View 1: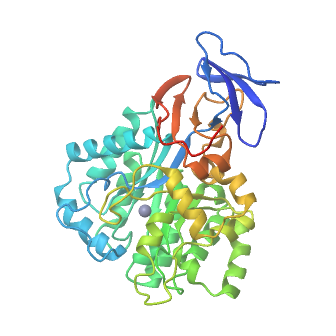
View 2: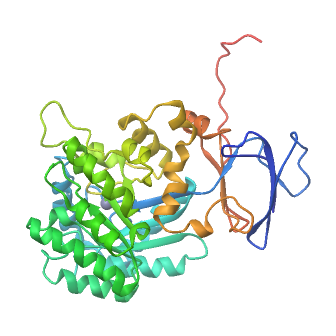
View 3: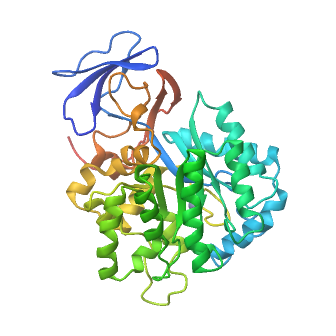
Length: 416
Ligand SMILES: [Zn+2]
């Protein structure tokens, strides 16, 4: 496959790229726009970048909003209650249908790498087993990582620990946790130590729903980061949400950041989900409920954005468009400076790939898998501003999605 007239991120010149046997074999600068040779793809000066990464989504719960009941209050805790009503209706066919439909939606929007959580607070483990099976079946089409996620607690749910070990033995890629939902602070702390021990025992990654609450006293992040540091697992560990950090005292946060930086752990923030679920116990002023993305970034800590939900008991909107999450995130976190815009796509591409520990096979570089997307825009800023469509998605040199740019006819306001 040959692509001409492509613009790459942070590079003003046009480029020609070649993919041979599934890998980028040549990437060269053009001095000017060239005529497209027969059989090649003309990028037309559009931005060619590495595929979008969805680092935090719950595919087992996707597309179930309102079944059997809607989350009327919009709180996280009513979401967990509504989900527990839907859980008995789960079966393999139901999960497969919804997961495939959701993956298709994500692929249509430029995603080629997904980390999904699978609820293991279910003695049958049907969600986890179905997702692991689909991961293996779809491995040539999409990268899927499955997190064993103890929704109702690792140590507070009956046989929670046993179910976790069963999930890891079945082949879950990542150990999950939910310390702020355990019955007591002590159980929350113990759960974090257990998660790290399990990651070492089974040689897996870690991704914890950590402090997803507005309680400024929810401080399990420090335990997770410290365990990651002492066990030298930093880059393999991720803290998702950490919304309590929004409400931490600044003096405590300043101390905490030293540990976070030293630990090398990754962060995932879910802007649409958190602005919707957090701040629910506030009157006015209402907290924004997002973790300190801007400050984490400025401190050189790896942070990325995710959707979390698509039409599920926690969040009844969502459409697979990570550019939408990025737009929300930059607004809510007040990251609206020119420098933020210039590298905005990092938050849904490179940083997310680092979180998933897939950097060795991710990016537009010779020798790496020939995976890319073509976006309607010339650079990060213009794609973000236009909310530019994904026009093409290529995996190992094969087109997996193509979209015709929309044609709009309107009255002419500008005279030539
Ligand atoms: Zn989640």
